[in-house]
Figure 1: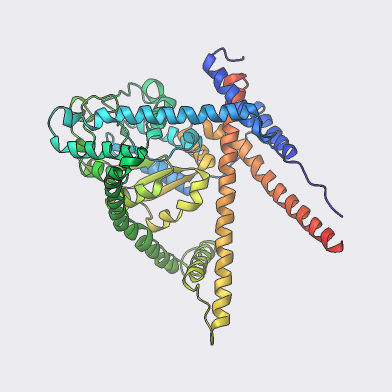
Figure 2: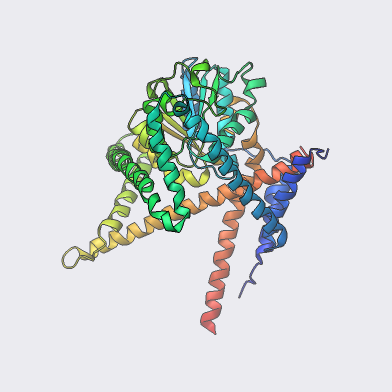
Amino acid sequence: MISMDFWVWVSALLTICSFSLLYGDNILFRFAEYTFISVVIGHAVVTGLQTLYPMFYPLINGTQPILIFPLILGIMALFVAWRKYAWLASLPFAVIVGVGTGLSMRAVITTDIVGSMRALISETGKIFVGQPGDQIGYLIRVVFCIGAMFYFLFTIFVKGRGSVTVGWIRTFGKYVLLIYLGIGLGNSAMQYSGLATSAVNRLLRLWLGFG
Amino acid sequence: MQIPELKSQYVWAILMIFCYIIPGIMPLNTSFPNSSTTTNIYNLIEALPDGSTVVIGGSGVFAFDLESSSGTIPCIQQMARKHIKILNVPLAVEAVQFEKYLIDASRIETKYGGEYLYGRDWIQFPYLAGSPGSLVAFLNDIQKTCPTDVYGTPLSQLELGKDLKDYTDITLWICPHWDFPTIVQYVTGERKIPSISFAQSGAYAQYGPYMTAYPGQVFMTNGFVGGAQYERLNGIKGLGHAVIDGNQIMSILFVAFFVLGNITWLSKRTGGNKK
């Protein structure tokens, strides 16, 4: 049974307008696109404003007067839109970048660099134990990882003895990266496909009453 | 021989009919494999002591993240069944609405958890601006970083909120958002709290290595298939199952289109050489 809910109809018509891009650019798609963007921006602004009260509640009730400093920094950041006084925004942005970089440097070294090295060492050990299928899997992962690292580390062409071998490994590393990009692209394609599937599914079930 | 070029409209028409409309009207109930990682996540939640506190949070939501919803919704239902407390911690503006949607779509307050009450069993925090700084602040001191919930009610007035101190009160972190690396870095890497990502297919290939770097601590499911696997473990048929037919047919059609595209390209190249 077709839905009688007004908002389901709005959602369905906007979904169809969005899908009309598949035939080519048209005014219906533009309407849906601009509606979506404006709703997202409006929602973000309202949520941001609503956040101010809970965040500065301790300042209002006087338990954390130190919160006056972030409030001042926040107001200073707004001057970015006013060219004459845009320099005032430099300070809050510098604080944001500085804190972000400081925190990230610590965490990224622990998780991404040391963590990845630990994983590689651990997987190298697993090549020699377990089921043959798993062993091949670990071998591929370790070899691919070394190949990809080679590609980035040996960006300067090596001359003399061993240059041919290094060149081969570097070329192999290039193919490893292409395989990685291919996997990423395939997964992204499946992601968009899944979103489209769920959108059409919603049209069929919620709007038209199939299933 | 040259193969004529296929108009993109025809390709989309084929995809629409075979992947989306036909499976939507007549479900094919195609099979899909189990994943040991999904089973491990399910078992991890099952093994949590009743009354544990779990955070659902992060930043980056893509079009209501239906892919991650498909796994997160059955997981929330499982947690509600075990009376696990949930803290929704949004680190992006759009995450507030998304996390509330996850709770609503799970129907734990009315059906699957039963008597699952706001303030006693779950809390929706306001948007925490300034991640990762705000995330670190939240982990170090929940009361000071988030003195109220999203509705402006002081945490001290909420049964679940009044005793929250810091990250030691958190048993597990679930990230249904895009920015999973931030959670791995600060929650799992620095504070040893296990983390789960109900990842989108696009994120899975990118963030998968974290599972290798932190075995037994970082877990990820893969898109709608992962969601469907979780639904099966939880004994329900939801969003994951609804789209799995389309996904399976799409996988086959993708291969067909890749082959066809390459043949077309090769035939054109051969034709060009002859000229």
